[in-house]
Image (cartoon, rainbow, N blue to C red; front, side, top):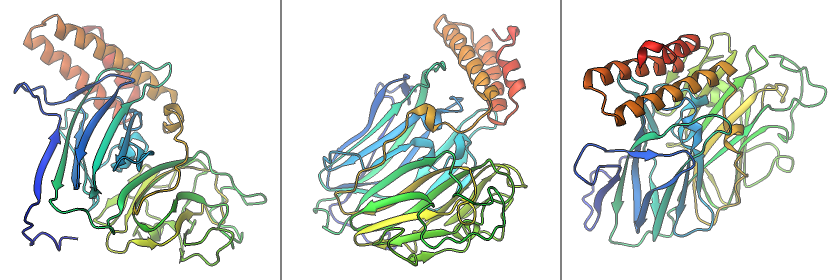
Amino acid sequence: MFGELSRVLAGTRTYRVSSWDRTGRNHDFVDLTPGQTVTLLEAAGPARVTHFYWTTINASRFHFRQLLLRAWWDGEPSPSVEVPLGDLFCVPHCTPVPVQALGVVVNPGCSDLLSWGLNLYLPMPFASSARIELTYEPIPNVPADVMAFWYHIELERDSQPLSADQGRFHAQWRRENPTVPQEGADANSPVWDGTNLDGKGNYVALEAEGSGQMVGLHLQVDNLGGGWYGEGDDMVFVDGMPGAMWPPTYPGTGTEEIFGGGAGPNHAYSGPYTGFHLVENPDYSGKSAMYRWYLADPIRFERSLVWTIEHGHDNNYANDYTSVAYWYQIEPHGPFPTLPPVQARLPRFPDLVFRADVARVRYKEKLDQLAKEGADAEAMKRIWGIFNAGSKALLEGRLEEAIAVFETPSGM
């Protein structure tokens, strides 16, 4: 991976595109308005993106799936990347947690703020042009506020044309909510004697057409059935399709093995290549998430790749599965599934989470109004402290406390 670091490349120039304040002041962020689409990058090639960073402060709990990233390389008609921004950066279920991996790093910010530093290190080469757009999609009937968005995109520009064997970066989001147990299955039972000899009922994270290699997977499970859900095997079909090809090219032995864990991981961990970075409860109930970077062992394909996993042994669990697949391929790529609207992308949360976020938006509206009216520094400091405390309580699940903080009459 780091073999090129010692080479001094003549004619290669590095540069950055960012949200810096062109006036020289300190407004170093983009003000995102609900419904707005902004262009983060429009660049000529040959070049490659080498690093992508972003952050927000005290934004909505849901912004990780409200912000939708699309990227086009070399003037292609359909995007090669179409993913809710948080999921692309391994934020599971709109719940940021630390990640220390080679592909993605997620770092916490100040303990008094709701802020995370999100970093993506997968290279994104292009021959003639690149365009990266970000859309802030409002949730119907849920108030939304203007969001401050900071970002850096580092690039290398080459003097020589891109070689013909350089694949383009792709990322795709999918969800099955809930998965459907096969007929006759012992539903939501960790142990049963079903037999899967075709893989046709598995959860599908990627169906790619063309020639390339898969380099990563971010998988999220909301365990609605309870108990250990991870007896499901991964079945990866290279240059063949489930139902027509057997056995799969990569026959698996259980969910934890894919992501590098011991039997039934019930505590979070994060490593360079593998991790179970979110485990909500030690009894496996609720939300979990995991990642696998195939950086040292990419899954190479010449015609097609279908990455699948059973939801429970022989697909007997009704759970909420969400994923992002990362891969490179020679264009053109096959059609992506239609991305669902934002309300269908949101995680399963109790209504109280939405109530708390509405209270946050209302408080933020008053805060912004006071700032426009020129409230004195001490008053703004006190009000911002209340806003920070409420936002942190919201993320940490102290929902009644968050609502009480945002609705306190003494705050304004």
